[in-house]
Image (cartoon, rainbow, N blue to C red; front, side):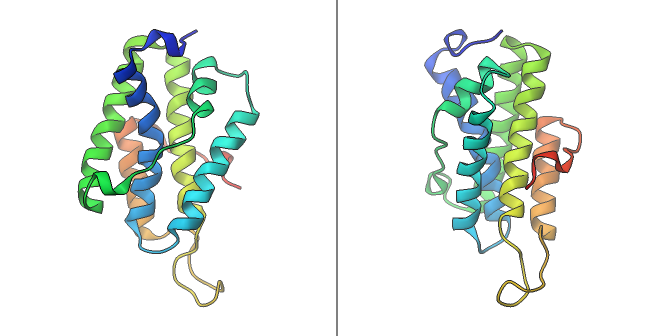
Amino acid sequence: MTKKADFNAEEWSQVLGAPPLAGLIVITAQRGGSLRESLAIGKYYAEVRADHGQSELLDAIVADKPEMDIKKYGSPEVLREQGLDELREAVELLESKATHEEVEEYKRFVVGLAERAARAHKEGGFLGVGGEEVSEKERAAMDEINAALDSPEHEQASAG
């Protein structure tokens, strides 16, 4: 089992930073709803924390509060580009240190987090009526995240 102690500070920061980046990529794909989406990300971390014990690595990741600083990137475009690179790098790092199962759990966590953010706010409609649960731009962001993680399409199991 891979533990936090298996990483130096810079590596651990990279592993911790990638999941919230996936959420930010989705949040910034479509204007509006960022408060709900940010709350959904925090709630997702809490839910995964409640499933404590399944993966020591994932337990250590969700023990820290997710940090999301969009201002660091300057624009949604830069966030998307650099964020996808950081997701790829985090997975590559994990592939060099963690078991295959732990890497796959990490990918599922990241994709689940991004899905939760995408579903947190309906796009379009009027006063909450109508609209679409996940916009075309959010779907495109999810596709890019899946590609960056080299992850199969994540089923709706984590949505809710």
